[in-house]
Image (cartoon, rainbow, N blue to C red; front, side):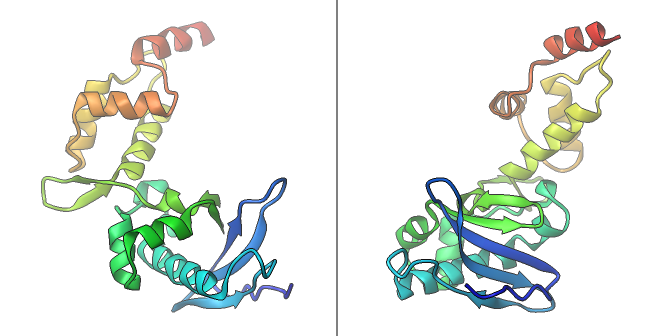
Length: 196
C-alpha cells in the first residue's frame, strides 16, 4: 500500500468491514476542491475496478454534500437520501445502497459507516430542511446543557427546537430521545438530585 497524501484540509478513508480490523480501500481528501488523493484496493478480489470507481464517486458526493458536518459536527448534518446521491452520480438507488453497505469512512470526527451520512429531512417553517441526525444532535446537546435540578421535558425541547425553526412534535422528541438512550425528564431529575 502507498502512503496517503494528507495535504488536504480534511483527510478521509473509506474502510471495508473486516473480521477483526478495517481495511483501507480509498482515501478521499477535501481542500479547495474535493478530489481523490489516493486510491487502492487492499485485495484484488475484494472490489472490482467498477465497484471501486462507484465507491469513489459516492464518497466524493457524500463529502461534497456533507462538508458542514466535517467542519462543524452532527448539528450541521444536511438531509441526504440515496436518491440524491444516485442522481448526482447518475446511477440507480439500488446500486448506491449496495455499494455503501458495510463500507466505512474515516474522518477527522471518527469512523462512520457510509450509510450514516444518509438521513431523512424534517421540513422547516421557512421551507428549509433539517436532517434527523442534526435534530438528534441538538436534542443531545440541550439535554447535556440542562440544569440537572430542572431537566427539560420533551415538550419544552420541542418548543426550543421550534424556536430555532425546526418544527418537531413532542412525540418525535420522545422517540429520538429514547432511541439515543436518554432517560425521560423525571428520571433525569431524580438522578440529578442524587448527585447533589
